[in-house]
Length: 190
Image 1 (cartoon, one colour):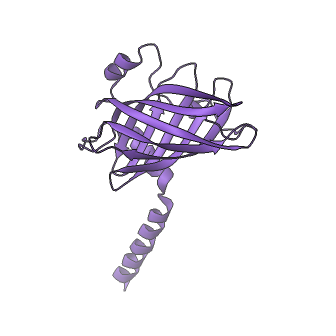
Image 2: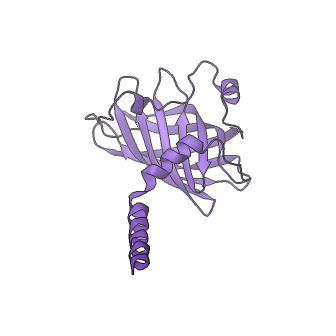
Image 3: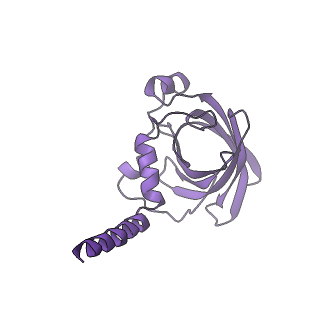
């Protein structure tokens, strides 16, 4: 009888732990260990140059940033190495190894915080991703645009990073090291 009780407690306990371990914890594991996992040919892991467009006051603008991309299983985290300019983080989930869907976050140099959603297609050769982003601007208008990525390297090490962005800082969680993630009145922008 005691063995059955221990067995039931084990089953219930594992169910509770499974429910509590959700996507945020999985993304933490990817952020910590994703640069060390073996790379599959179709894996998005590496250094990527991202380019997106957005419209402000009727003028279309384009921005480019380098991203360190880490992956474990179907979970992917992408962070910019920018120092002194806007900071970006994308967290997503791979579907069928061809699609990456998730959320993006931006912290501007003046402290504004924006966020939205994205969906990317990973091209068959694995060297490019393209898709769309969507989010709100500071006037609460839903905006969107294209987002393209080109792989620069399969490595995510500091020495490799320095080749592509030598005057920028190594990817950090600036939003996290700044303390809290207070959302300003500017909710989302591109």
